[in-house]
Image (cartoon, rainbow, N blue to C red; front, side):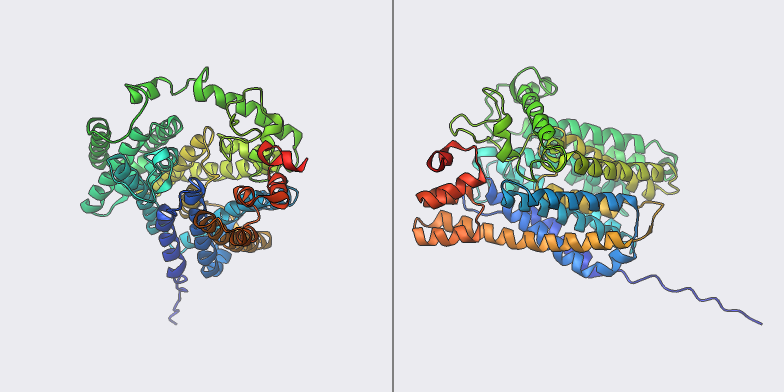
Length: 518
């Protein structure tokens, strides 16, 4: 008797969510507003809208794929981090900043879980290559500004930021995107792919040089060291193609660095030898911005100790920091009493601890450590070159993002959140795990709802900013304040006791509003 054994076909790979993730990764690079009245938010808010819409639409289309994907304690830790963020936001002094920060977290987790679900459908390569392309495109806009191109969506104040609006933002993206571009070249099927990745690598290296970001230089060094270590594994050496490609990539990288130093640009640094000075001061914490960071970190830890359970509220660091600031604190704006220079601390991790509490920050760290440990094991056990390079790319990218985040705001922003979590989900192939537990199903739905709220909030913010920039009509400005009640500057522009007190409620320590209401 003949026995026929039939094998059920693998589930069809859902194309819609993959295409949405790819389009979103490109859109977040170029999303910006020409309205210069808000020189920071005109970049940040449109990118947040791109992030939230990508997460919402891709997540909705990928629900079935996500439910089929494997999960475990790492996903529960991430869900716990999100829930604690929501609880913290409900108690925050400035609920609008809190909602904005929680929305970034929610959309980032949607992208992570969605990309993981699509990985099970074997769409990892397309997603990771698109993230690498997005980083190269961001670097390209930065170089265009550095070499003289003027555009309404470039900021002249923080050149060469390109469409990201700030040179440090571009540098951070170049640092965590560097290993993805390198691995794209090492895994390319044809010589054309190797050359394209090599050209992209030369642009990324040139941007790293020109932006002079010490945090990015340190992060990129860590990423390159990890990729170099991966190349020594047997699974890579047995492939036979890696080392010739490494030589091609190295030549293009060196060419990008030399070109950045040799070709005259339009950047105007105060120092005669800016790049040598940056290299010399890369670990200087006795003076300048390094000393300022140490002061800020110490005072931020005092804030965290004062709010140990749920923190001061997501996004509320600039609201509460003036209470803890030192005398002549470099983080405070002396021209505006009670106001910080930046809307976030100079470290992701200081923000997570002080704004969300030690438990939430610990859960996020635990999840990242779990992903790292699982993929280290995957790297050691890799049977193929592609598998080893995929694990290595994930480890190097995470190392660069975490390292840069020790010294600057990285995952607090929309573009890194979108690109890092998408690539992490696509590359994270944990060997162990169970089908998605009910708790993670609930976490995914919660994160989708948060993405929807974040998208609506971003639309309202953009509309309010445009009205602020276009008119001084009090009625229109008042309507704009209803669209965006958390817009501090808008309330001050309208004036009058009601709106000035509304501004003071958002930033209680700001002297420019508080004097009227006390």
